Image 1 (cartoon, rainbow, N blue to C red):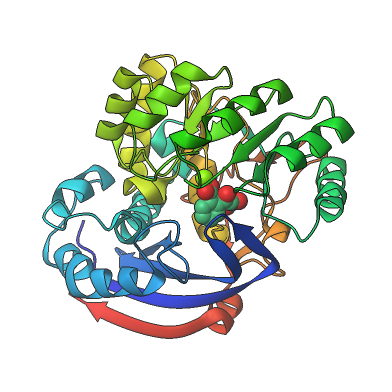
Image 2 (image 1 turned 30 degrees about the horizontal axis):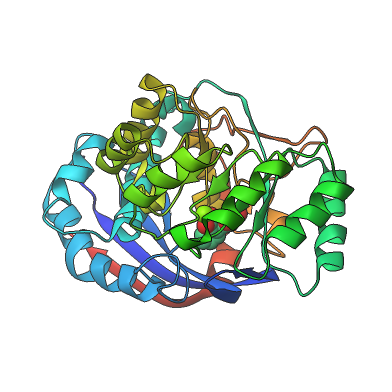
Length: 369
Ligand code: OSB
Ligand code: MG
């Protein structure tokens, strides 16, 4: 297949609620939406790197420059037969996984539409519905946090993830646990602790958490292995699992018992599936994380989460939890039982709303072969 035209759009997406983590507070997301044209069809992907280099070294601006200067020219200069050609095509560019993901996703969408398959079917997905969880940022008070949890539980969310950081951890988790004794609950520290905090991390064992996500340094595998050996609660790695190779190291070292898979973090859907397959072979459950994506990236995440070893609820919440009006129609919505439907239409299976795309665009550039 010859890609005839590529379009990049830098979008500004104001969040319904500010999102605060151990690395800061965000009031809006910035993403690059990639749109590719070939054979009378189009495909969409999203690079949801955000405003600043806090979660990862990438930003919406680094995605834009790497895509404009390197990835889009490579794509337009080479024909591709299948999405699985993309990782090799982009291998000469070191790193920048979120930038690569937006383009690889658009190729997946385009190829699935060409075959008249859903993206889920193209990936080998087996689920018709996926289980939704919700990730709750640090709030101004524990009372406010309890109120917000209550309303998400009423909506049907199947598990709640709390962001923690030093000073917003043990006491807060204790309050949440005593108010919601049976709630499937987990915490995510976004690398805010070190092994010196072992007593505090061990003290979390008594709250029956499903897991503790990424407590230690963003690139670490060794200290996580030491920590996992010293506590009972399963560790889940996010930032540290940058590829299937990192997952293999983590499994061999015993750094975690669960893996959060985000296509953006590992460089695309091919690599996300490779991490999934490896974890499945070794008996580690996985779940799909998020980067506050719009409906475009969310559609890709939902399709990935339909693979068989995604056996835990993901950070795949309804569109309304993030944005007043999503870019896609229909928006992603939670059923009362806390699940979301995996779209069955061709490609991502949701319509991109041109008006919304235009309203959110702060920069736009078109490239032709
Ligand atoms: O660490 O999982 C994370 C959002 C942005 C960056 C990193 C993370 C998150 C979330 C929310 O926890 C994920 C989502 O709901 O999209
Ligand atoms: Mg995380």
